[in-house]
Image 1 (cartoon, helix red, strand yellow):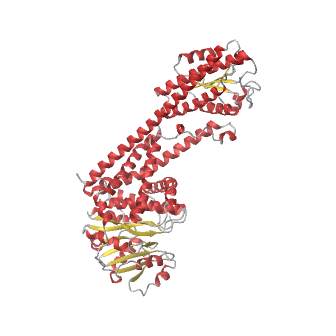
Image 2: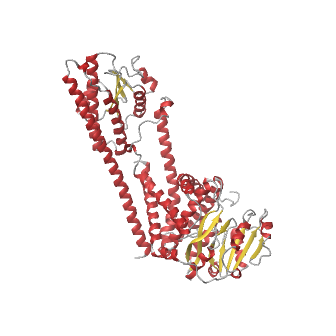
Image 3: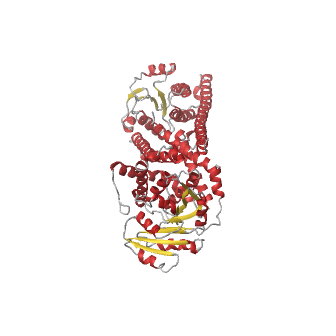
Length: 224
Length: 413
């Protein structure tokens, strides 16, 4: 074998090894992301269950509870951001991503229900709540715009609670939730304080859908 | 399919090529070349300096040649004024009485005619060429001569870097030239070079005579001569410590013009008269690897550039579309926290980083092997951030010129 041929073979082996190492590193990083998501989700699950249990235990006087789902909502949003990023990296058809999304959707529904129960039991100002239904199956051209506008609203108005759901997720609880909230598959779709709203044209138009005074930069309206 | 998948084969080829250069650098022939010491033989040498409007630099060039550590009775310097219209004639007149210097004045006919005119006046055993805007280290010639020990070696190249780089563009070129030192040293050890650069390349006189002197070579007479030497079955060596410093274009437009000339010259020579060398196993690594990969590099440079433009344009359009209507104070405020989770790393980014890191390592190696003085930090920075953006401009221009048959004048194009 000539020197050139030998060197070419060694170079090819180095190239393959490097490409393999890069592929392994990417896979390792993505697995670490999934593991991180699972950990966060497990903790959230425990926190929400704890809140739920605390609420049930103090059924007679729920408003005396120190329980608060406010911080959990923030963590849910953080979790949603991470999940969205992981979905972009791993692909929306990744089995682990789908499992985490299902779990996340359940947590969101649970948090939504607790918030609603606390509000009904304790009275006071009703928190502004948005249920946002999107799709990333390529059939919702305005979903990215709507998602960003909702991020802006969520960051600007701390009292606003935003719950995002992938309309196409094959999850029994989510399907029931969609049926109960009477949301059609015309995406993006919003349920703002119980009222359905379809499509996204602009942030201004979306803001008009909120009841007067619902969007407040103060956190006073947040449930205690 | 994501468009970035198109880049993978080219990145793979780039990494393979860099790995090949590295492995060859560590192989026995390259190690032997590095261990080569200046020999005791001192054959007769003539260095031809073709000058066309080089009044600002030619005196320094000639003085650096006169300072070479070589017996004065064996070293002749031929200054060829190729019809300069500036003060070159007056500038070189100061050497008229110097016993080692011979001045020729002729009507402008191009660099190849100036070189041939110079060669015709000397009977030296080895002929060197030095552009009139370049300056040599005093021990450079002593490094060159031992490379001719093998009678099949017809030419020897030196180790180029940029003379006193001033702006970032020149620092970028300096890094690129020093990268070239590693590359040339490695590839010369397996006889894969296809250019003998104007600054300080030497030729065996008998071979030049046999091959018929310099030709126009599509404005790249040094490349044409190197290809002709390879085609004839001779070798081209490299002396990695024969340091020569050359002036580099200081403006983007000048650089693009220079590189367009080099690239069109390469494409016209290789795809024209020397097409037979491509893929020819008879010509070893030059035919099988060097010329095909150089052609692929032109294509990949253009493709990756357009891919980058597409990705940037797409990303920018999406960003603007998504953010339209949201207050700018929010849009321009950074959100989120610094977290490993959001590291923007994917297959293409990591392969690109590996390719760049190897290139930077080659630059550091080139500086070390050649013992080139001066700091290289600015060169590394400018090479990292500028080269990939600028190089596609001349690749595109050259490809368009070759495709549409456009010929440009060296000086005014």
